[in-house]
Length: 227
Image (cartoon, rainbow, N blue to C red; front, side):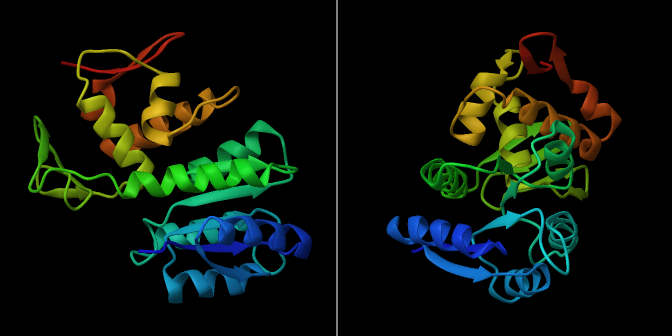
């Protein structure tokens, strides 16, 4: 099935450029030029992915991201955040709020298209029917992309889910940041090690103390899930 991408961007030239490249790749594209319209479109249409500008009239990208992640209907829609702010703190804030990725303007439309494809491919991974991964009271259902600790469901983004799965399926083995970028994000390049660190921190917070401690930091290399 054709995937639908919503672009929320107030700069017309950038909007049309992204739209053209995504349509050329075969995606159905929805557009919005303000934050409020973007949030309405996302809630009504439930696209497969959102390309979200940070600086928007009416409601900025961070507020939209918060609203989407609070809504059960839209909480699992992956978000690529666009920002003219190159400071590391701005990128980290976006990731902390649940964005799956970010790009700093000016950016390559071709690179954006590749990232869209990589993120959507994560959703389409074929899992054995009925497959589960178990660690103590932590249970991962690969069919439904759901995680439980005992009888309590833990809400994870798709990126967090795949990150946890990659670590659990390689228990006791160190996964470098480059390996995690390649396996979970589908690409790797300079400057993205911090993306892994930010998602690990969010994942630990959601899993609680016992399971947070099970994700060990191997200084200067990456991460390992305890045996």
